Amino acid sequence: MEAISREDALALLKKYNKDPFHLQHAFTVEAVMKWFAKEMGYGDDADYWGIVGLLHDIDFELYPTEHCIKAPELLREGGVGEDIIHAVVSHGYGITIGNGTTLDTKPEHTMEKVLFAVDELTGLIGAAALMRPSKSTKDMELKSLKKKYKSKGFAAGCSREVIERGAEQLGWELDKLLTLTLQAMAATEDELRREIEN
Image (cartoon, rainbow, N blue to C red; front, top):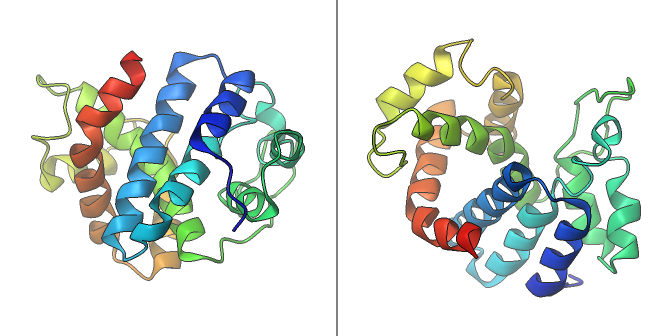
């Protein structure tokens, strides 16, 4: 695995992303990916999983209609290895983007499958947390998350179909994916808040 330091990865992300919402999403997915790495027995690779999470949407802000197509060029220019590029591109598998192209790089490694599964879901859980008096995931129960999940109008931009395909690729029931991702977000919430405030 060709590694890029987190410092360099963050500088690269910020070169193409200025919107606080996009940066917060990158930090959230980074933290959740690291949590999953440790939880699933890949603790030694946790920083690597995190960097993939940090960089996964590098092209989205400037090139939304070329999402996952422009990324390899931006990442290569930044000295990022082909393994990370494959992981980043694979989170768009099967999705048709703005220019009508359907992305066909399949998630293969467990890490790539986790990224595919949690990307949209972290957005939905984050939106659900904002509706709570505490604005936190720490006191959110699976029951209330599932209620929001089933409400089609809630966080409509977060594709349930992609989330469900993600669970399927991991061989998990949807409830398991929801439970673990909620746990991951609750466990990393304080660290994430510090990151965003920096």
